Length: 232
Image 1 (spheres, one colour):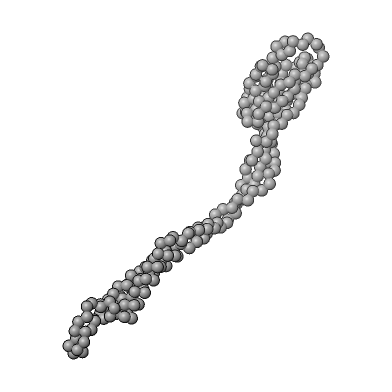
Image 2 (tube, rainbow, N blue to C red; image 1 turned 180 degrees about the horizontal axis):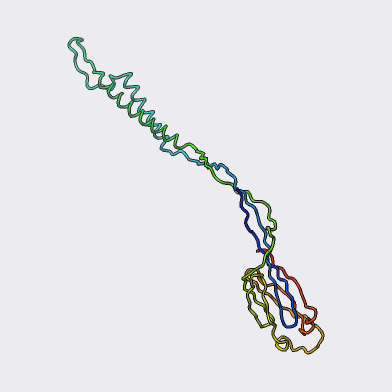
């Protein structure tokens, strides 16, 4: 599965001045990129640090099992006070008490040992594997089609202190009626001269253009030009 998306747009302005009228055609120059969606597997490693309680559990288990082993091996050491046995004609200790103590400590030791083993298993590092989607981006290249009219854009023509506003039509064209020449420059020389102007086109920023005065020099042969913004 793949998708194509527009990653950059530049604006190209082509203008034509005929007399006191200026016509601007705006076109969007689009750059696209194809993004492929590929199945992938993601591994997440969980690193755990063993708790000191684990070693404490193992230590107590060792002590408890040691006591139980001693109780089973020498039960008389844990017996109650010695009693006189008339048949044997001697004092003897009942080993049952020692065996009971050994059983209790065996159960306690096994419980602590089991808890230590369980905590040790939980403290091991884990690797979790899950299904995911990897994105592979292709090269940036002109879209198909690479350009189109920049319709509906707000456009401003800046001439000195004058700002003229307009909106591009469905074909990306906008028309301006230039101010009277007397308002633009005090020059009275009839020879052609350039007038600096700027087109402001939304996010594309300011596009510098040039006009010709007196306007009469463009009545028969229009003055044209092209300006392009950087990709946004």
